[in-house]
Length: 318
Image (cartoon, rainbow, N blue to C red; front, side, top):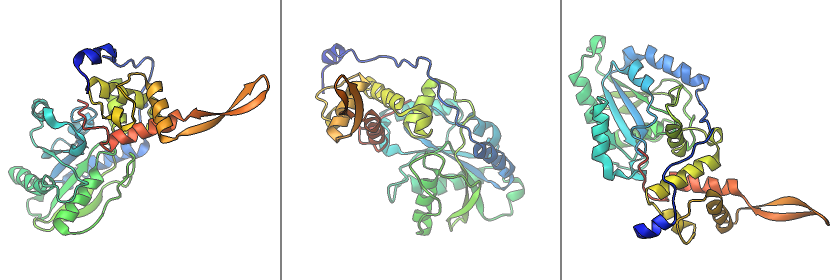
């Protein structure tokens, strides 16, 4: 959209000031309970499928999974690949390999007939056959456990596999907010040959998010409830990220004219474009009057949702 000199003249931020902000530690009781039940059920499990958001393939993965569940074969599924800028895919795979994660698949589970979803059963079958199943050797059915932080597409993956292999519909509830799956270890069939079941689990965070920046990436991708962080803060981090990566689709979408680094200016223009205004009572010398003001919260909400739907371009946050 613009040359380097013109962009430099805009004086876009090169770093994000977190100030005294704190990302809330969202670790409800059902999460702690979930992790304990997962560990207790390991003896029934042949392989772990960890699902994470492809836009944050390195950030926010729960290290407790590796410690608690690492005794089983492991497949990392990076979902929502349709929203991620995968030009740096090889770099990501190298970094994951340095963390001893060698079995990785990128998927888009909401798209019917995603070819990568079709690779999951063969990949898992190979991993299981190469491993020692201990006391499960005589058992002909395979049991997998699906794990991950909230709202990365675990339920969507299960439903996609059922559609593909069993020609059946939803078995797991899907939602656009974290915390939809609260039932612990629901057993769901996903394949007939080989006979394969999945244990669905609630999203579980690490009880300690490693840094504010990781917390903001998790919040931006919708894995933390927005109100715990604040929608305007999330929107500001989104604006900073889009500008830093020179992803300027937002300028055209909201008819801003040019990139802007000031959140209040951007939200005001978004609110005006969308007709999102609210009446505010103002006290004047001649009495109270109602004036129309831009609804900044509604504008921030629209900005964030547009990003999460991929309407502001594909982005890699790691």
